Image (cartoon, rainbow, N blue to C red; front, side, top):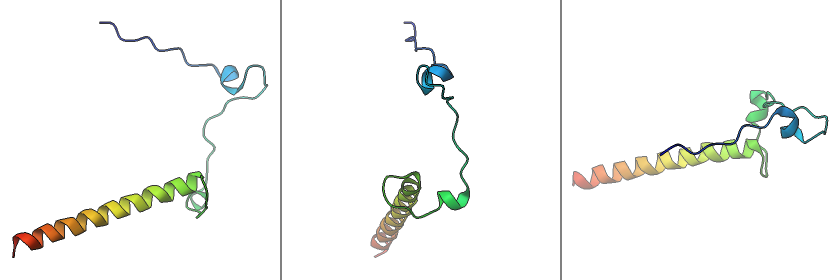
Length: 75
C-alpha cells in the first residue's frame, strides 16, 4: 500500500495572499518579559500561563494521591 500523497507547501506569495504584496515571515521574536506578562483574554501569554498552572495542578494532585496511597498502605 503506497503512502498518501501530501500537497506541496504553498510558496510565500500564495501563503501571504495572492498578489497582496505581503511577504510571509516566520515567528516574530519576543522578549522573555513579554512572554511572561500576565495578560487576560485569548493571548499567547495567557495560554503559556494556562499550561504552567495546569502542570502545577497536575503535579500537586499526583503528589497528594501518592501520599494518600502511601499513608493508606502503612496503616
